[in-house]
Amino acid sequence: TVSVLYWNPNTTAHPSTMQVRRATMRDMMDMQQCNLRCLPENYNLRYYHYHMCSWPQCLYVCEDVNGTICGYVLGKMDDEEDEKKKHGHITSLATLRSHRKLGVASRVMEATHRDMQEVYGAHFCSLHVRRTNAAARHLYQESLGYRTNDVDEGYYLDGEDAFHMKRYFNPTGGEKVGYVEKDGSITWSTLRESPKMQKFLEAAGTPLPPPADAAGASGAEKTADKGADKPASQQQAGGKGGKGKKGGAKDAAADANVDDLIAEIEGKKGSGQQKSGGGGGKGSGKGGKKK
Image (cartoon, rainbow, N blue to C red):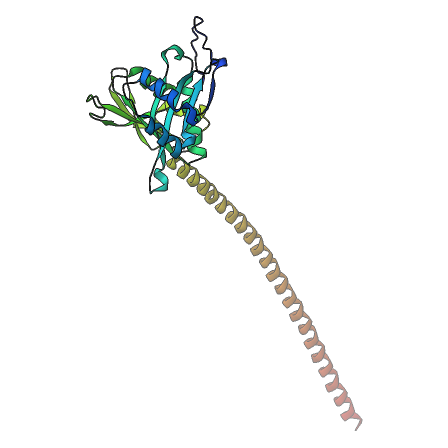
């Protein structure tokens, strides 16, 4: 995907001068200050330390050329007994107003996504976003590939609803997801039915696998091809069998000729014996006359 960055020349912040790295214990207070300046949902310092000690690979910060922490992501892993449901969760994400539109949030989020997969084996990542936070929804949906899974009513302390969103790392295509429109309505579909998600996943290097029906159809086609080849081979074998029958007929004719020859020879022998027998009679007759 191509990220469009908007740089304000009146500030010292520039994408090429900012570094994204894993957070350390020394960054905890700066992350808290960034949170207090940007978000209404705030946490005490112990909560940051808890995340740091439990899931250090899920915390990233972005600092500018002056060493100022201008953005951070506070992530964690949710405990699941089922291995297939193992996933990460974004607790907090914030960027200073002076450093927005520079790709800070996208960069720290992608770094956390990568470690959730490689280090913890997460299958997806979830988060909550306010219904009225259109800018955050645009970031999550268009830049990071999140889709709505559910709506949690009264999730925030002030009673505002939250969209429960997920980013699938290795989707199958059958996951039912929702796309939040500009007016706040949700269009539900599967990942495979969403052209935008298919393009995003292909660009991210995780394209959807072929559908099961297509795989079954291809298998059926292969079976049909094999079935089509089989009669041909049988026909060929039948042709060979026909040739064998012709050969058998020739052998039978040859046997008949042999039998005829044998009969003819035997006939000749019989006639010779009859002639010999006749000569003996004559001889006996002559002998009688001599007597």
